[in-house]
Image (cartoon, rainbow, N blue to C red; front, side, top):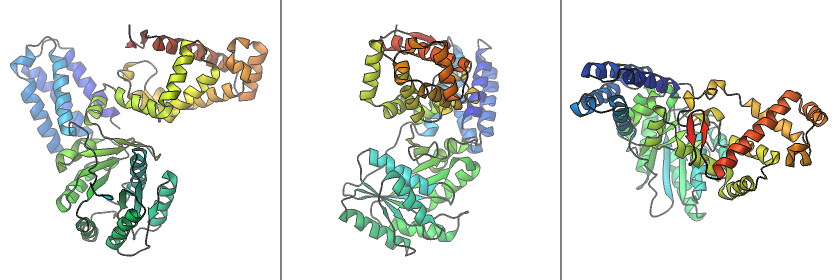
Amino acid sequence: MFEALTDKLQAAFKNLSGRGKLGPKDVREGLKLVRVALLEADVHYQVVKDFVQEVTNEAVGEKILSGLNPAQQIVGIVYQHLLRLLGEQAVPIKFSQQPPSVIMLCGLQGSGKTTTAGKLALTLKRQGRRPLLCAADVYRAAAIEQLHQVGAAVEVPVFSMGTNDPVDIAKAAVANAKAANLDTVIIDTAGRLHIDEDMMAEVARLEKAFDQLEVLLVIDAMTGQDAVNVARTFGDRLQLDGLILTKLDGDARGGAALSARSITGKPIKFVGLGEKMEALDVFYPDRMAQRILGMGDVLTLVEKAQQAVGIEEAAKLQKKLLNDTFSLEDFRNHLRNVRKMGPLDQIMKMLPGASQMPGMMPDEFDEKELDTVDAIISSMTVQERLDPELFNGSRKRRVAAGSGTSVQEVNRVLKEYRELSKMMRSLSKGKAINFGGLRIGRG
């Protein structure tokens, strides 16, 4: 979502770095480009005004302009203020000391509340909690059935009472959770296409029905400035505890993510980055700020890798690399694990400097190529996967025919396997390698 903003900010910083020594006028002109980039990304105009003014006040100081590398120092200042704008640190959900904890999701219809309820339930389940989903949207056609389907997908129970009063349903769900020894109730409330008094009155009644309640506003990040207006209105009527931004992987400009916290004063707690139930991430302001400035997000990349592969599997892989027994079978499994981490274009954006590497831009990436590689390796015999040296012309022709590819493509897969094997072996032995100008590993 932030690609356009990242590109424009990097262009502004490059313009500053190309000028050598900077004067106050240079800094102000450079920050004008930053201002335009933020406005074009649909960040709220008041947020942009305050942000640029604060950065300017600090950047034109005598200490910065007389530094050895003033352009880099300005990038550092922008990063710190961006971090402040996003919230500085992750804010967890507040759970009640006396279970069950009650979490209410509110927001407009179409913002993704029901799907987010399922994603949140799965996230909490993986953290060791025992959630229950509560169907309190009694107006939208098939809303209750949709939540039951979502619950089945994440293997979390769903409580519903038809079209009864939502407050009665929520209270009964909490009683049901206590009886079933479940420690968290997630309430999926009704939304409307537009904010109206009936909707606001209903969520206000639900809020007052519980002494302890975590209220999370679900916002569609693709709605631009309207998202800010929605956040402000809900914030005026409810005691919001935080925000969840959905569809942050979409094509919108992303200004809602930079504006919502500033406008409401409430932290962004989670972000939705895809349609799959696993695609809900804790919001880390520092990682988001780094990604916006094109610095990558190595910590999230490592976490995704650990979830996809697992510690034991990674240890087995490293042992095979050290013993030089990394086979084509392992290569295929490795590619399948990489795909579990999410869309490859999203993964590539987490690599520092990936946008500057040839062939690493998202629009240059074709995930279908991985399907071809998988098909080619799957067309090999077990012996061939374990010992690629067996390959001769006739074997390659057989594999090409079996996978619907060409001998040239089979040769390319074998070459990529050997290159990856060599690179990973170097990393596992603690050596550094040079990858597109980026030094990876020790040494």
